[in-house]
Amino acid sequence: MSSTKSSPVPNLDCIAQEIVDRIIRDLGITSICSLRLVCRSLGDRCCGQRYKAFFGQQDVDLTSYSLQRLCQVAAHPKFGPAVRIIAITAVVHDTSELERMLKTKRRRIHEQKGVFSITTEPQAVEDEIHEARRNLDRLTSEREEQQEMRRNESDVQLLTDALRKLGALDVLTIEAAVDRGDKTQLISSSAAREWHPIWVRASQVFRIVMSAIARSEAAVKTLIIYNKSLRCSVPTSDINELASLFGSKGFNAAAQHVRFLALSVSTKVETDLQKISKAYAEMSEADRAYYDAGMGTHSGLLSDDDPAAISENNYPGVAHLLKQMPNLENLHLHFYNTLRGTPKNYVKVFSYIADEIVLPFLRRLTLRCFYCDEASLLKFLRAHPNIERLEMRDINLTTGSWSSVLDLLLTMPSLQEVSFHNLWKPEGSMLHLGPKELSKSDREDDGNSSFACMSGMMVHTRTFSRKDIQHERFQFADMPDGRQYGSPQFHRWITALKVECGPP
Image (cartoon, rainbow, N blue to C red; front, top):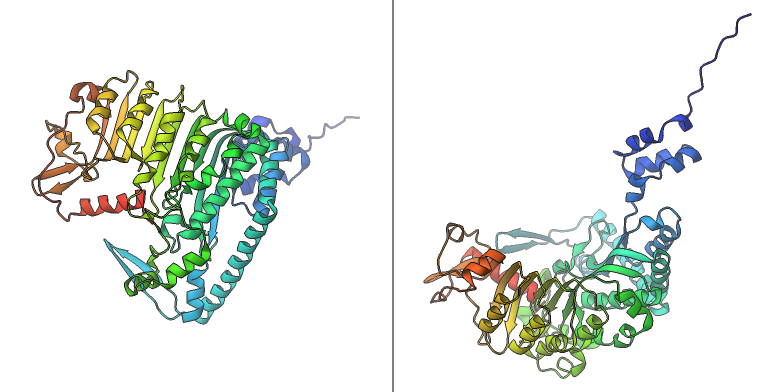
C-alpha cells in the first residue's frame, strides 16, 4: 500500500522575513496597516524599520486629539523609540473672512499679477454660504477648545506626559499657521489678514512648550522656534517673563542637551484687545480701504517711544534663555520689529547677550535683523573665536563702523565661510559689498544680490569662502553714487526686507 505525501499548505508565517521586508519597502502607511491586520503574526513581522519610519516625525497642533495621539505613540514599546522629531504648529483661527462673507454674501478672490495684487468679490452661491457657515462653526468650536485647554493647562500636561515618555528627541520645531476655514489648507502666517492673534498664539505656544520641556526634562538636541514662519515671533518681553522657568532645575537639565537653537524674537506687541479694537475703529479712510480689501492693517502697533515698548524688561530675556544652553554648537537668532518707528532701544537685547553669554562649542552663527552697537558685536565675536560659519543678514550697526568688525573677522582662525546681506551703517546707508576687481562671476549676477543705481550696481549680498577672505580681505569698491532705479531687482529687495524685518 503506497502512501502519498501531501503538499504543505501555504502559510504566511512561512515567508522569510527578508521577503516581508522587501514587500513592505515600497508600500505606503495605509497599505502596511492593512497588511498588519491580516493576522497577528504577520502584523508583528511588518513592524520593521520601514513601518517605524512613519512614526519618526509626529505633527501636533496642540488640540486635545493630537496631544492624546502623541501620548499613545510615545507610550508604545515599539513606536515610541522611533519618534525623533516633533513638529508643533501654533494654529491661529481666523474667522474674519468667513464673517465678512456671511455678512456680504460675497466671496473674495485674490490674484497676484506681477507686483500687483487684484481682488474681486463675486456673488457667493447658496452652497458656498452653507459651507462658510459650517466652517465658521468649526473654527469657533476649535478656538473655544484651545482657550479652555489654556485655562486648565491640559495642553502643558499632555505635552509633558508625551515628552517624559519619549525621553529624548533629535528635533522639536514650532511654526505658525492660520486656519481660515479650510483645515486641509492652512495658510502661512505671512498671508494672514490679522497679525495680532498670530503673536498672541505664538507666545502662548512658546510658553506651553518651554513649560513642558522643563517639567519633563526631555533631552532635545535641536530646538527651532518660528524660524520659517514669516511675520511671527515671540516678543522679548514674553521671553523675559519666563526667566524663573529658565532658571528651574528641570529646564536647566533639559537645556544642557540643546546643540542647535533657532529663535525668532520681536519687539513689544500690544495684547490688550480693547486697545487693539479701538485702534482699528480709529483707522483713517485710506487704512480702512486697505484693510477692507483684505490686506491687513498697521493699526495697533506701539510707537517706538511707548513706555511699554522701551521698558527694561524687554531686553534681558533672550540672554536668560541662552545662558541655560552652554553646549550650543549652532545658533540662529532673528529679530522682528513690530513698532511704529525704529527700535533702536532694542540694541540692548544684543548687548545683554554679548555681556552674559559665552558658548565654548559654538561653530555656526546666524544673526538676522538685529540692532547692535559696535562694542557688543565685537565683544561677542571675540568671545567665540572658533566660529566656522557666520551669516549676518540685515544687521543695523548703531555705533562705530563695519571696518573694525571686518578686521576682527580676518583674525578668526577657524572661519571657513561668511555671508553678508544688507549691512547697515549707523548713518542709515548700506555697506556696498561690491569687489574692487570684478570677476566674470561678479558680472553675471543673478539679480538676487544687487540692484542698479544711477552710477553702477549696489551689491547688498555676498558670500565669502576661506580662500575669498584671504584673497580679498573684505576690500570693497566705492559705493555707487545716485539713487537706485525702480527695477524689479530693487522691488524684490525692498519687499524681502520688509517681510524679513517688519513691521507687519
